[in-house]
Every structure is written in C-alpha cells, then in structure tokens.
Length: 252
Figure 1 (cartoon, one colour):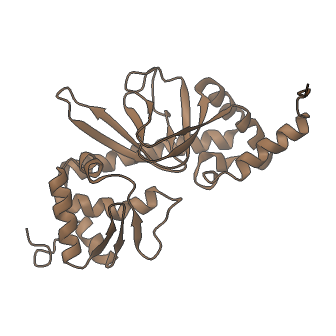
Figure 2 (spheres, rainbow, N blue to C red):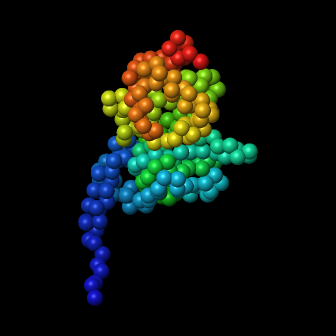
Figure 3 (cartoon, rainbow, N blue to C red):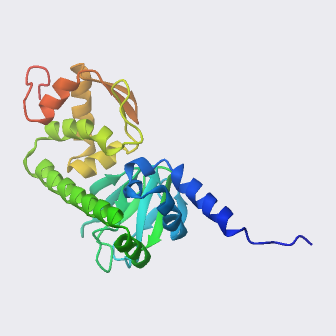
C-alpha cells in the first residue's frame, strides 16, 4: 500500500506562491497589490473553481457569504424583471471582483458567458486579511469606487444616449474592460451574444444588429465573426460614442 504523506510546509508555500505569481489575473486584480511573500496567505484562503458557459455562479437572493475574483473568462450580471425581461447590468472580465458591494444577499444573478475560472474567498476571511494588509484594503476600496463609477456611466448610457451612441460606446469601452484580451490591430473580442449586448444596452437585438451593420457599411468597423470585429476608424467611432452624429454616413 502506498503511504500518503503531507507535503512539507515549505513545499506547500512554494506551490501557493507559484499559483498566485503565475496567475494571469494578478496584473489586473487587487491581488497585484500584495508583496510576493503575502500571496501565499491569500492563496491559503482561496478555493479555485471553474465554470462552463451558461453555468450560474450566484443567483439573486442567495446568501452573500463569499467574494469571487475572475481569473479568466467573462461573466454577465443580470436581474430578471417581474414580467420576465432580463436586464444585464454589467459584464465581468479577468481581474474583476464579485460581491464587494453585496449585503447579506446577492442583489443580482451572475453567470458565465464562456468557460471561466475564479478564486472564491469566504468574505469573513478575506476581510480579515485585508485589515492586516493595508495595500489590499486600499485596492479593494479603489475597486469599489471603480464599480460605482461604472454604474454611473451605465445610467448615462441608458438615460441619455441614442441607440447609435450606445453601441459605439460599448465598442469603444470594451477593450479596456477586458484587459487580458486587449485590442490588437483594432480587433475587439466579443464573448457575449448580440442578445446579451442588447440586454445590456437596453435595446432590441434587431436594433443592435442594425447599428452594427450601419457601422460596417460606413467602413468604421469590419465584422470578422459573431464574436469579433475590427475597428477600422477608431476616431470616427469615438466621435459617435461622444454624440458627434454622422448623419450622412450613418443614415437612419
């Protein structure tokens, strides 16, 4: 019979340090605020989980006992209205945190858009570690402030911008929101479906498709596939996002 033995503590620590130091999300996450020697403590309270596309992470009303850090992939945050309609309030990418603003229960549901990996932390343990590591606590506050700013921008998007401006703004902002997959050569990765984009922008799927077609016809973008496009004229796209209309090029 093979005897199973525990690894020496030094080996365990090296494994934990390696896991965090090689994590693709560290550069974009609050974890990057920790010194290398502190990463082992963080990994010691982390549970690494994986989801397939469509898998739920949390449901609206679930007890909010954990925090989650997205280490790869993408997710959607949404709320179902009483009449069954879905409002997507945001998308999450590598480095994003889930549960920072939650009270005792989750106010929204979160699902994977594509295969996604995360670190799960018990909220009490993570907060205790943050209190001991001022740099981590400061990074969490900055992340929470970033989430508030994103929520305010979403209110502006839905409340004041036209359909054309919403689609253009979404395409301009998306590469910055997904730092692990930056735009190279103007290519924008779109892991979400047209329906999900519509639910996020408060539009119909037909309107989203129509506005993308107008941008294509005007030569501003090239549609490469259902999940990617290339921005050919970034300045024109940004001008539309900022409300500078091009009626001749993008006629209704």
